[in-house]
Picture (cartoon, helix red, strand yellow):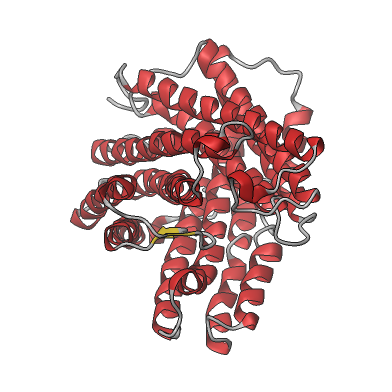
Length: 460
């Protein structure tokens, strides 16, 4: 089948440029580092919130500091570092702009993790990009963001004009870059227009509200690229032709045309702007995800009887878990009512859906980039452990939220009165610990593969 062959050959073309391949490995290493750092803070986070052990951490600040670093490393830095892998592969050997961007991103990532131990405190749980209001932490975030922006500009300057509609992987990579660039422009617009009268959490809440919603489009596009790629890799290709897949991926970012309009008509701290960005993500971000998700379900069901090769099982399980978690997150989003733990249950499901897709794509990329193929019991069980843990985690959060537990609280402030509430939060804690174990297993599997360098696929 011509369309299937087209997708199957795409990866071989992307990894044949040594400079691009080496830089892609560097970005992947940065993403794995971010996940490892997030795992350390996740252990502290789960222990600080679970019944019985939360008494060991009597202050709210400990929970909040750990939460902020965990979220920024496991979402913002991990996702955008992985995007750097795709932009580097698609763009070819990086120019000085791209190399400088990577160096800045590395310094930013490590500084975000180090900041709490160097005096950064005053945690502010602003949505999308929580911060420690300290010059070191803010400078670290700025350095990472600037590094990613330079990589985006390097990629767009060299590769955007060569993208073809019969190449959905390249189209999806381009749309993710456009979404990130739009988020950067939205951030700049908001920063200029936002009243300097705001302070503390309110200031960062308004500053990151619009750009944070736009970034969700970039994350979703990365996940959809991984879905298309991995479905083909395991012999379950999506039915539409490459041109139709490209059209769906473009549809996924078309709602971002409304971003300048929202900024132009509303002040960034107005209720109208907050509602407009909420509706933009609520309805616009599903335009490509829903049809592609349904196509993926059909592809998996239609060819479920076809036996997978042993080396494809970790990839296939990551893909299936990604689809399940992203779908669960979407359903929980429709159940949100009030400010309770159903909200983090929703976004944990959606965000982990993206994470699992990128984990699966990492497994698929490793042998193509010149490293060992992930295989064996640990690789097979890792997506199941991580996915099952996250399902328990979001299930416990959702049940707790339905019983009135407020989000972003820990310890006695949670108000865990009654056995049902304690049981649901216990399920949340158990799931969180399983997810942490699954995340650690992923890092271990990848590090073991990275330690076994081989000739990359497509190399002469």
